[in-house]
Length: 249
Image 1 (cartoon, rainbow, N blue to C red):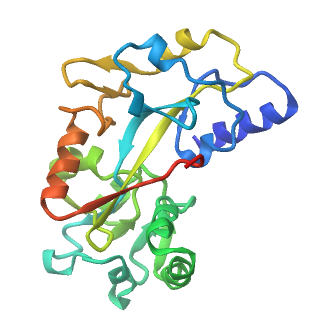
Image 2: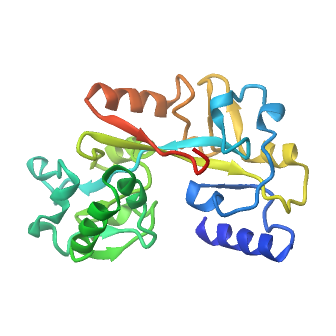
């Protein structure tokens, strides 16, 4: 995803056709692209106004709730970090994996502010034993690392965690992060926008929401989706979700 985003950005600067007419990624990716206005609501009647953002240039297609992945055989129930600061406990030094692109730490900065987040990261870096990509949580479950901080999404991986006997935690001092993946169309596209968009997402009317074709990632804005239920369950447990502001807000 980061590599494709960089390629599309460079192609836009050079005035060349985009490598892909459709891109799905985070705000960090699409914010640097030169985008066409979204025709999602025209192409897909079930798309509601809250699902279109950034002055109509993107469609929100996936909700994410980043958190912590941990190995339940290496981290006892009474040892599971209850605060972000607990990751600095000396017992976890050399046992934590993080991502090469510092996934979700930008969200932490939105909650804590730059000064506190920078101070934390300077200490946290000394705890990290290695870098793995989101989606490689299997390396935590296999015991290579005791935990991963942070993953890219907690809610979408809950079922897999239970099947593989891993535990997961998501709590920024009783505050959770609710962020999104966006469907965006570069201005230098090659095909019709509706045709391209149709191949990337589908409307699941049974769940009154939207999901990528692998069926795992879903939108919390759609009532009845697994992500909607997950967010509501977390809120009942006292987690207050912090939604990322868009660059235009």
